[in-house]
Image 1 (cartoon, rainbow, N blue to C red):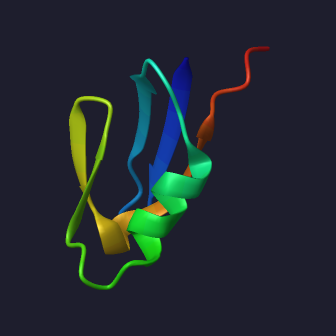
Image 2 (cartoon, rainbow, N blue to C red):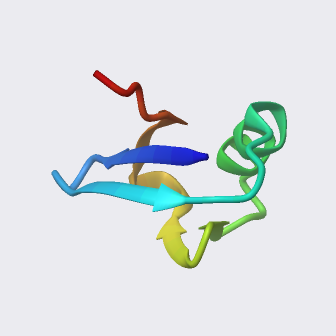
Length: 58
């Protein structure tokens, strides 16, 4: 599955992942005791993540 990640710092990433659980990602992003979030093979600062979701194929 192809996931799109947009950051507040203006970066856009497309990451291939085996599975995507939006509930788990949301919990990590909103957990103030978490500093980084691992999505696929990339590590993001929790507070820099603006959007995470499936990449829509056109």
